[in-house]
Image (cartoon, rainbow, N blue to C red; front, side, top):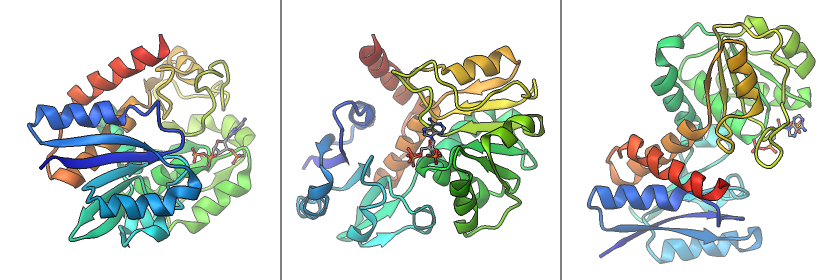
Length: 281
Ligand code: ATR
């Protein structure tokens, strides 16, 4: 019988996950279907109960449910629990188990695209201290990076994020101004805020005047594919990476958790770029 997968969120109509996962199921000959479910916050509890009753095999969780779903699940993986957010749910032995593949998705994309430039001693700066920053920060520390600072408009949020991480590194919270003036200390800069995302594409979260020319600058935004920040970084001679890779790999890791099979990430990327072309033209 055809197996059911999906994604829950509010809004959900622009999600590129259904096209990406349905294409992977079809390419691998897996008899499964992935559906976008529009679930508003007041219906989350009933929706999770309903999906379990309908024997869904797995689903993704997106804004605004990544944190509020935690008490509704049967088990939470330790990394997702530390991050305090779930983006992937797996049904196993009748139980719903929550995982977080966002941070691992970012790190996998980084190693895939920039592996030759990234090493364990890299000095890393994360810009922003929201949910995406938390997933990336905790995952970087869990993978052995220790020199990871966080700058944020509200520096107290960066302080809390570092203080709550179960792994202790050598991290400092910084104001945006402090980070801007010490930017040449960093080999890798990871932009995690929504600043620069369509339609406000002219905005930039941090001034790159002091950027090291041979550094790597990543932006988790993929719409537009090249944010103003990445354009400025390229002008300064840095290597750049947009958010497509993180999106693809968080999906590929979820797919693997559900099926035990690694999907073709290049094919997934093609499907996503086609979707983006369709939505941005
Ligand atoms: P998410 O969960 O998607 O990461 P979030 O928790 O709302 O989203 O966090 C958004 C991040 O973008 C925060 O770091 C936020 O800074 P504050 O903590 O100071 O709010 C940052 N951000 C959003 N708008 C910003 C702006 N106009 N200038 C600077 N930082 C901004």
